[in-house]
Image (tube, rainbow, N blue to C red; front, side, top):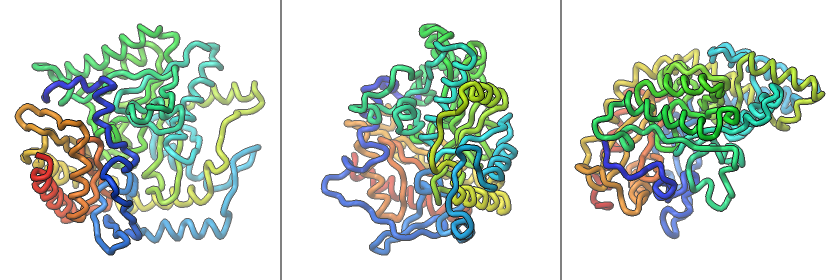
Length: 457
């Protein structure tokens, strides 16, 4: 386990995200944008003709790779047939029904109904509203508080941005809103105590959640939001028994569980959905990104029948469910999503992940031999390395977040696009990646770490 740096304090988190995860504005002075002009397979090309392995699938999302003609043709065909229609005032279109049926069957886990949005942010925002609506329907007007985690990422709207546990997404936005609370981040390597096993650490995480619920009053706490594997907060894999213990606390106090599978879903972790991998039984599941391989925006909130029926009955009372989006369930997005899922299934892309996982994770683990790497971590076809100033003590860079962006720039010189999350470098390649391409990716990654040592030390 690493040297303890109080990582759950807002000061430490602010430093760790000194370079905004969704902006390069403060990264390198006077550096212009990288202009990406085209992509094919796992690679993209900039406007200077330079080729890169896109090791982040764009933003965790291009499952079937770039330049997939089947998705282009699906969008074109739908644009020619019905370019747009809505789902308001008792109207709909065939593809939204077909996709809903496909998703509920594919996801399983008790999910029976789907509410569409245009992004994961909107989907998490919508889930919060549904939870409040649900509890009002049950005559529990005080049960409105939502618990998320430090370093979580759930979006950037006012509501979902509050769920996000990254201070730079709160600073000067007057976030988080008062209904949202945060509990500790389950990062065993950084936060585990000396002599504490993963299971013991998971117990401590669950105990902290329970203490927070009791402090706030269980009658006021409505839901717990969590990514099965935390993504944009640093690719944090849950410790053993974590989700079992978190769920036990939530069930004890009738706290709903929202599983944010925006990054995890559609095979990324080795199972079709990470809830299955970790035994999570949620009330809601949030989807986006790989649902269309981000060829076109789409988000979705899946819910159990128990939840749906309460919301539906309350809507009858109110004569309207007063929430929705003009472009939600857009026919072109539905067409692309359906074709994307067909490709995932017909090409066995989700089934390939556990076959490729030992190779991918083996090469990732080998990066721990590098002087700059304190920890490598991952699951399925995603992972990250945490950079350290001193390997023996796991001491962080000063300032925290100063090394990661420098190494991503070195990566560009090696034809590799990584993602710097402070001093964490993340990788999440398209699911179409081959064994040879995995080795090529990590060969380049090793060169980045070797050259980076000369720059940051």
